[in-house]
Image (cartoon, rainbow over all chains, first blue to last red; front, side, top):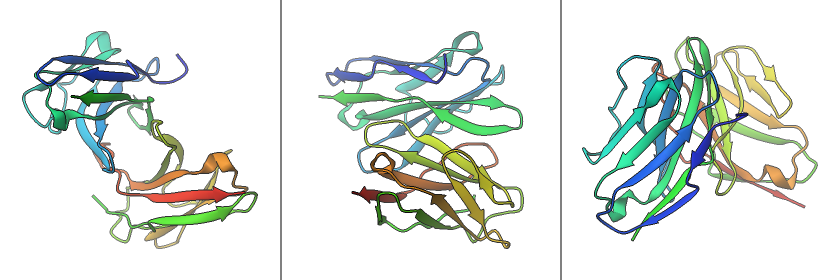
Length: 114
Length: 109
């Protein structure tokens, strides 16, 4: 597609449920990032995929969070046993890789945990 | 990573140029200055980036001082749709982005 797409746009779930968030990066982009943005907060890095390398998971806040990227394209961020503090906008960005510097963001998934 | 300092907010009249300052006094020689903006309820949008030279694209111009310790983003003819939070970022070596509070720009008719 022309840009990064994410689904769903909005997700409301109950505390304790699992959720899956999807990201479709720009075609051909080898680097993919997940961030989250809480109300009134800045951007928080979660995880980074680059090609076939092992992902950089250094930003994941707990072991309830995991992500995978299948076939070097689509990525899924999974949050298990959701908590109210997980409520945030989850943003995905992709970058061409190598020396290409710019990350392009998707519209985000707004997650609300009740 | 170099930190950036931006004013909290600024107003601009529609049709006038908006000049957004950013200080990044600890920037290192190979770090780029990036600007993104975020319109309410949307994902961040890339605007422009630069290393040493001034840059211009269809959205904006970026003026970087000779010592690279500060820069200015210029929106040449602000419109109401330019109302957003503008983030000045120095790119980390590992490409992870980190946004601060940014500058909330309000364009008024």
